Image (cartoon, rainbow, N blue to C red):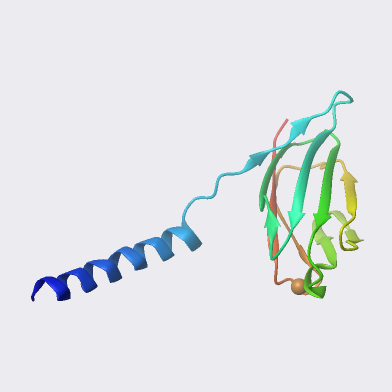
Length: 126
Ligand SMILES: [Cu+2]
């Protein structure tokens, strides 16, 4: 192999590594902020996905997830928390609060109504 071939091969290996890390690597969770009233609050921007898409809260304390949808793509116009029986419409440009108290620990997926765009709520035991 000459230098150019080595560079191409090395670049390919690096790219594969990046892709694996990007899709399957560990994701950092965003911890909820505590309000003065003891509510665990996080603002989630909805724009081609959920940011953050992994949110950590504590079991048994009220949670307020404020969804701010900044896109018009109809894919994300509803957010569903199937495990908690919640479905909310997210009008573009508005902030919509999803409020509930997680009564059990675990990792709960939330998603758009088509289940294409996803995020996870990680509930830690109290
Ligand atoms: Cu969708």
